[in-house]
Length: 346
Image 1: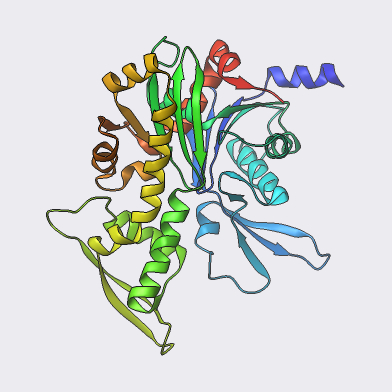
Image 2: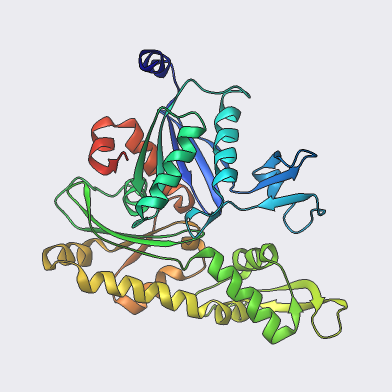
């Protein structure tokens, strides 16, 4: 059996997976990203009590908040970890089959990016999800390292580099040197928490009830970390929580800046904490090289200036920040020596 598994493994298409709270990205070894879809699964319970997949990714996300009682739209990842094991397994297997035209791949080797500091139980859940979905071997790479690689930082050099990845469920901060993480910190304050803060703000200040999707759109369309020279605004529709009627209000970029100020401050405090603990020699490198931002949170207007003003260091946004973690995970898969140096296999 082991011989057959290895034989099929030689013909497999090895995969790199950025299993994110908001989106899942998949790369084939030696190729670009082949899947970039929301980490959402829509399931229906059949007459035998079994869950059947109706949709995954974009199609499933469109169902969030709009499904009848017999259908559930599930986000199986929460705060960067698996919240629903069975649904995560179904999602991974679906994406693997999609790459191969609906057929199951022949025992691929898989490398999966995970937040820094996962417990043994959480790492085991990620690994077993991929194994049950058909992988023959599973490597895990920690998100700050993947982000640094994907951002093009010289992680193998004896120099300190600092990367901040603001994802959907977690913000990952890491100092890299000589191919490893010298120091890292993960906090469960990121895109989802920013969205929740916007929902609460609009409810408190406008008496308007909105959903997470509307809040996310507000963050993207008019969200800002600093005061803008020219204020942005948009009309938001929702339900008045007092009268219960459907209505609309005008929300400005200043409103959103106020709404997300507390979670952004938590991210800044975490960054300051890492800087305070960084060894002196590496700290000098960071003063010279600056800090690199990746992840969807890096796209918030003015967040580089916001953090730079607080930590008094240069802050840069990586090229294609949304794809940095996925590309770094793929690069680790493409280079065997880098894979062995920066990842571990449970």
